[in-house]
Length: 564
Image (cartoon, rainbow, N blue to C red; front, side, top):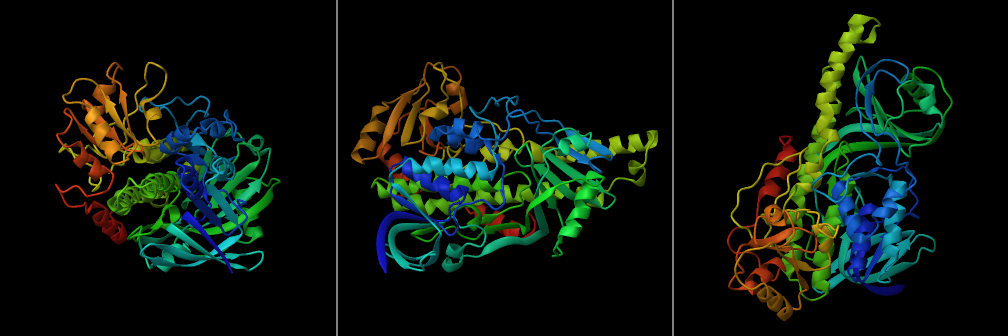
């Protein structure tokens, strides 16, 4: 039997596990990533890299890798609702290509289209740059035993059958919805275990856009007399397409002959194609009732499962990884306290509940055509049919807009009620879905402002804490630096006093920004005891002015009962 050691053992090398390993490596922390498969992608489960994830990619220096992936930058991103590709169109949401889409005023990045079979290799390439990161593919996680001073894990080499004992400081399960780590932790998932039984069919057809008159589009939503029944998505903007038979709460399987009939119905006529893969799956709305013990953690699908409507799943998981990574690094490097790790569930669970709930609403919007199907006249030629199609299409277009425009979900979450955030007594702002508004309030993502040198304020955050000076205020900022040095805590001071718009965006003369880019404290005066603030935000002690938030547990209960 083999024996080995690592600081952080990560189980599951999907995009969340790869991001966690990469961010830990970027921070100089030793970690090992274990994956049961050989890493090949059977079916890409995601294709939208959200705006916050792209901000992480910017921090990691890999934006160009994503933008230069094989997905064509000139491919239109329209969403179309229709009877069939050669039948009637009810409406569409025109959306420009990735090259043409502008960046929003509140971020140096924008969302990107990069399917998982393109994005995972990018993340692996990023993580592989760091000598502190090691990979073990075709290796199965068997079990773990958590002890006071570490975790002892059993792994099995799937080629040789050899058992290896790995001792680590911390174990992280990023091993998906059927997480073995979560199961062995005894943690339950709350919510709706079945929204729909859906079947994905990946097929090849290079000339598909030439076979109809609807033009190139990212997503086609098919609406028949029974309502919404099918979607087809352009996977790579070339010859690969993903057809999703939406299904219902009734489980069933589809043979190739039935799939052929469905494809022909979607096209409106027979055509040549090649089936690449068929994958039944269950659409769920679940969040774990806890994300951790003292030394074992969950991230990504292992602790939240969501309908893909909105593209929140992977992006929420990668934000889990970034939140957990800097906290693990702080503890491993000796300057972070135990409260830092204990804050992980408190911070991330409400974010997942929010995203999972909104994804469920998006599914309801997409399926609303089942309760309000097009009138029969909408499937008939002539002026009356044209009128009915326009009226129906206009209604469905407005209904679907929250799914297409949702940067508020990707950027608007906050950790104000975290025990390692120092609150300032300000009022909780409105929770926006579409129109994200930046706030410099503690717990929120530090605002983006373009600086004179062409950089973003966000480019100055990431490795350690940063004290931002925006002008005015009282006290000596060096007091923070001295207190941090005494605690061997990484802290840099940046002066944006002469930069236009920064003070207004941050709302205070001083803001202390965490390594994950969220504001930890702000004020117009340097506090009398900077060390007290630093001891809270680095997790040596919890903030004493209030109890830890119960908002996450309350919203989790609402999700479980279907009220959220």
